[in-house]
Image (cartoon, rainbow, N blue to C red):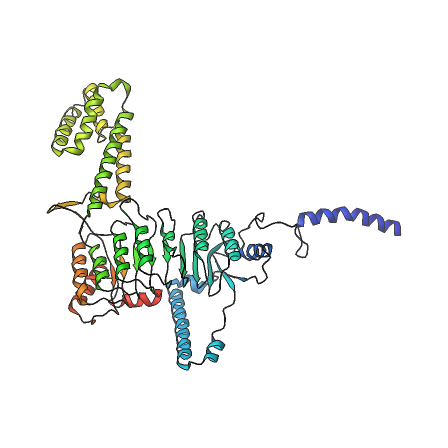
Amino acid sequence: MSRKRQKEKADKAPAEDEASKNAGPTPNEKLPAQTFDEYQCSGNVKIDFPGLCSLLKMKNIPTVSAKQPASSTPETEGGGREAEVKRKWSNLRDRLRKQMRLEQITKSGAAAGYRSILKAPKQCLQVELENEDPHSAKNLKVSGWKVNEQIARVLQKMLLSLSKLQSLHRFWQAGLTDRMVISLMNTISLCSNLRAVKLEGNPLPERSYHLLLSEDSVLTHLSLRNNRIGDEDARLIGLALSTTRSANKNLLSLNLAFNSIGDAGATHIAQGLRLNRALLFLSLSNNQIGDSGASHLAAILGEFALTHEEVVERRKMLLERRQSSSLRVDSDQPADQLPSVASSTSLSVSKGDSKGKKKETSKKDEKPAAYKENPKSNKKSSDNKASQSKGGKQGGKEKQLSAQEGESLEKVNPLLDQSVQHRDGDLILPGNRTLTSLNLAGNRITEKSLPLFLTSLEMQGEGGGLRRLCLQRNRFPPECECYVKIKQLMALTDPLEKNNSEQTEEEEQGA
């Protein structure tokens, strides 16, 4: 009997070993030792974050809180609008409660009560998931606790494995250093979908904020509120927005509220907006901007004359485009048609130098093109058109390339805008018509600069431009005549918004 049992155990052992191999390691089973660099992230933050922290031998590892999307019910599916309204009211109620709580703390003034009510925040990395899949992290949030060098290393290694990550929702008072921000920016450029960053309450000793707005930055939304950004920082940010040779082409919204930007800083940012044609939303609320800085911001909204530096740069760019067009004509011309190269090249050069010659050559080319019965005539006309990159099927590809190049150059730099006008010896460029929202609430603007805003807004007309201008809580009465006209003009450009929408939006966004 005992021999039979021993035989059964012997037969059963290989089967159990095979099953254990297929099942993988158990929770209590120790994984093979590996280093931080060898660790392969799975994309699950709740597993990767503590695992990487352990490999760095961290003692106090922050917890991870993953928030899954609310499950849809028949009520919410049928009344999506109603559910959204309830959510907004719930958020507003929570904010009011927090505000009342802070007011109670301020009024009491008791240090002991302050410490008891506002305890040190728990170190917790908050993760918002796109769906129930733990690998679908959409947003990461660090709020109120310090990120040291080790945690920064862990986050940078994890970011590359989070394919669904869209934003670092809020790094608020996280104690980030310039070195961390630079490393973070390099990592963000490698992430496929990460486009929004909120770095708030993080004053940087070496003031590296402008690196987040560099020309090759992929960010589309950036919030730098409450970072003690001053005029020198604003100068660097303005240079990052645009110069005569470069410009940020991806950033759509920039929030610089609750900083220390004065007139000089506002002037630098206005300079950066002269040739920037990407930014849609800009908030400079609750800074220290007066009439001098406000007047420069108002000036770039309307027509303005190019500076000497901009005029020189425009001539250089036009010459480069003309030369590249001539080189393309020479390289694309067939060998058996070399005799016509000289004339076609001269035509392409004279096209940029004289409008009269351009009209004459175009008439000569159009005349033989009308005789479709003669194929030789058609061939000659198409060759001539190809050399000018305007018309003809054989010149279609060149025409398309030339048009694409010209369009891309104009997008990169508005100095090549066809609407540039010559007036009284100056080159006049239409103002920035891309910026749609400008928030200057809570500054030091008086009635003196309001007419400048009104003039620029009237100059923009219906051809696009600013749709929302927030000027409340400045140093002029709300019943000021010029301010009333500005509000009426804004109501016409955006008729769906009420007159008090500015204040409502500002309270919701905290901008």
